[in-house]
Length: 251
Image (cartoon, rainbow, N blue to C red):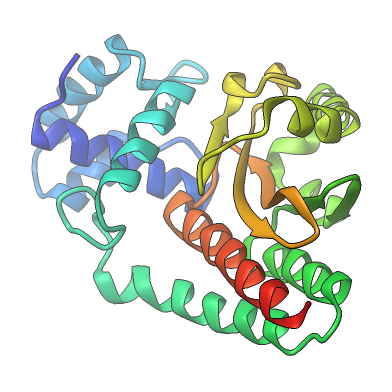
């Protein structure tokens, strides 16, 4: 199903509001945002639900994005600038400021280290602080992980079964990366797209970068499907680029 411009904006507003508030988004909130009637919003939400982009978690609740909705959103982020108003309802200033601050933090933590392992650890720890997700990096057989406790403070992980799903994914992460070897500068695996831990409802956002120490070097984050994809994708991409530059210079 192709979306009309208004349906696309409503979908993206639901995704962004849900990322910020962690509660289903109702028609009243969206009606105020778009300055149309609640009936108009409900009609458009019904079409988005029929197409599989949003779902109603329980009767009388608002709507939450599905994996398909997130995939549509991420694909559009990859196609266009994250600050372009055609698909993001927040202001350019609000969108850009956290990303720019995060990039400065990453650049400082990475470039100030003379040792490769310190630079990698600094990058991983910074991603944890900036995103609230679990941070990870791997160079060859060396795996760096930080932020497990931060990840499990997210409201999604009050469910024990979801915690078990994440644990399963982490147990198999390194061999999966060796086997799959994501070849794109930035790869995003959303929910059931993850080849392991399909039921854990998490997203893996990971960047491959060139390293003099290994031809399989990655850095990224693992977090709930509910997150600020524009911000996180930008930070992970920048972390990979910065590590590539720093490790090549400091060798």
